[in-house]
Image 1 (cartoon, rainbow, N blue to C red):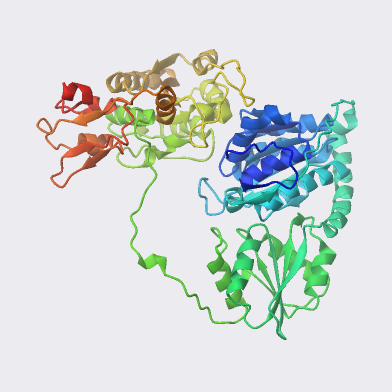
Image 2: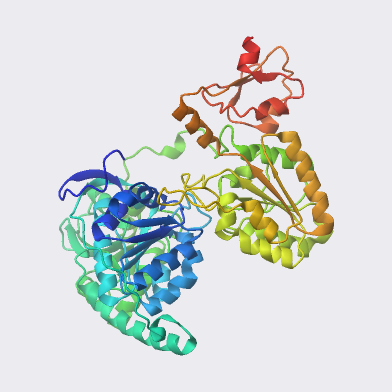
Length: 631
């Protein structure tokens, strides 16, 4: 955004992403320490704080992973300052070990943990519903619905966190994180607490004897938090339509927006009351009971798992309410993927026994071209995959990891056989080696630079110690590319934008005891191919071999060209030399190529990133720099 999100002008209105609104909420709340590992859909929170942290008086860091981010923020909060950590939903899995315990120990300054769920798995490996983490840990949970509420609710979450000395889980979903809305700014809290550490071993060192006591304390807090949920000003009831039939809808988070839009289509001739829950754990029991007791039918609308529905049905049973409670378990709403207004409208109609009438275009009948994700023109990972495919003929086992390079699974490379989670590509090849032995052919595993620092190192240590044999290709493109080019420990800049020491990947790998470590420019295709072959031979007899393919992300290269005003060097196909063999378009498959009606390839100058790798793949010398052709 162009306007300064740190401005102290209460009442000023800005058009903000949900993530930007959360960052503004952190500024208004007086957060002093913030830490994250970037992951969509939460990335823009960090991108925003990275840009403004100094002006806002916040210490901000991109931690090596979410566990470390939780530990940094959690420790700061025990020292009395307001702290924030945020991550995508699967990031909380990584951070769950310290998170579960910091709920026991509690905090002295406010601690809010933002977990950004991803219904529909837009950019994730699963659709897990992190509302279960509140129930698993005992942490209170709040869920905003709109960007304005996203900002305001963060301040409320800090008040709750400090009142009960407990971290607060703050759940968002993709549609809120990436929605843009009109947000009225509030005053910025200028008070900065002086951090102070007071030793309390019985509270903060959770040996078993202390943990048992802290668990009992947590259970007392949960009773008090349940009463707090009843008073939450963000819970509210809205009424739509009129009629004799009394219908209640209970919803939360972004699902509330779908309910509102669905009821704008029709209230089905009934009086429909909507209970919007924002403090969703512990449940406000009395609020829900009072809402349901006079209803003929209650419908629960929530994305992903039937979490609220299950709890509310149990609550109704305990309180001897006989009102029908309908939702996902009854088949009225899908359990997988995200909602939209039509899905919610149809579910409500079906639950009420009404006919569904949607006056809209059936988009499924309109043929649309597919656009599978692809590596960018000039991406150095393409050179790596081309070289590996050439060295192996595509025969072997190829574990992969999370990042841009996951797109190596796409044709024509199709290199990526197993993916569990961040960093798994250093652990899974050992499993393949021990299960398949020498019969598998080469085992070549792929991981990115940021992912290597995130969780790749422990798996590599394990592989070395247990004598696993495989090739690990660390694809170093000098950034955390897929989530928006955030820095990592291999770069000379930190989350505050200041100069930072560089942690050398090759020095780390050598220090762990890897005997074969070579760094290569992946755009030098022949050299990279030969190094991959050498690594395969080494790994057969000696254990892990590491090849670091190092070249900056193409988007960084193009950005530098624009910054300096230089022209991108372009390549083109000399048609008189071209045999239409298809190697450049089908085997190398850079998106900058296109084929005319006579099957001759051309390079789109608007897409060409000037890497020059394509010149090396043509066996007939038909691809040349534009300058050479013009001369």
